[in-house]
Length: 130
Image 1: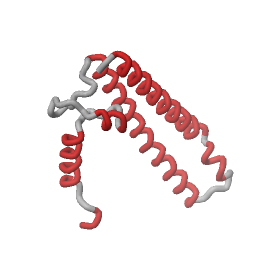
Image 2: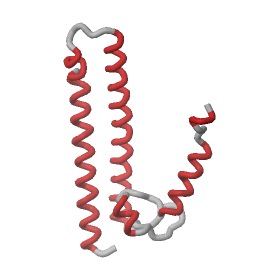
Image 3: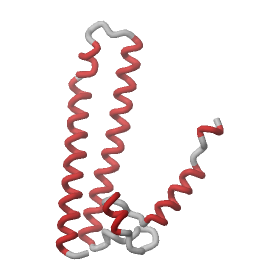
Image 4: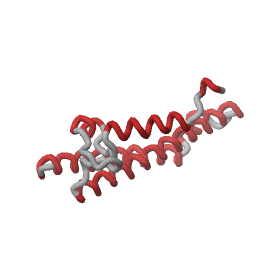
């Protein structure tokens, strides 16, 4: 990977990281400020509390996904510094340029990613089976 491409990828990854951090910070401020509770007013009942609980659960799930994304971006930056950015962690083959454009922090080539997703589907019970 040449220096110009490496610099462009690094800038894009840092920008994406900053966007995620800002979103997480804004979400945390909203959650801690009690804005959701203020919208409902002082007389909220059990149903309102259930809605608040669901909103907080969704926000917590989002925080987890944002933390995972930041970790993935940090790993991609480390691989970029090591010169292994476009190398699959599993098979050591080059990751396709189109895949890196679509998912710039991916660790796996398309084939290895599809393999892991198939294994995960087999390990996860289907909702239809319930």
